[in-house]
Amino acid sequence: MIAQIIFIWYLITGTVVYQHDVEGRQTYALFFPDGKVVDYAYKAEIIEYIETGTFEYDETLEDKVTDADKGE
Image (tube, rainbow, N blue to C red; front, side, top):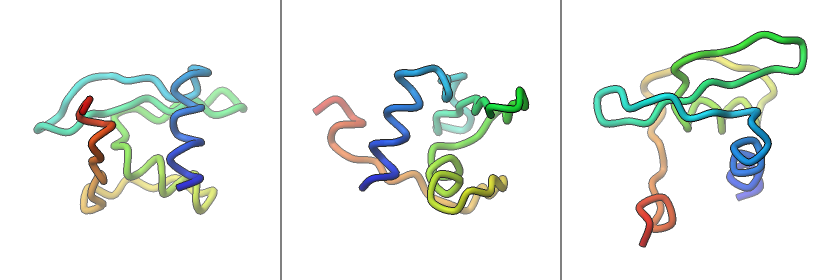
């Protein structure tokens, strides 16, 4: 839950920026304080980064879609 809130905060502050859909999944750019950028990251990968402090690409992680994500 707290990771979801942090993800939303990152979107608001520009730390995470929506890029486009890849195979039906939204991708984002993640900007780090040291100037590095991760491109084409899925939401689940960014949530995993928020929870662990280490970013790793992993297409097998599933994005948890909520009614709020769907706009309902």
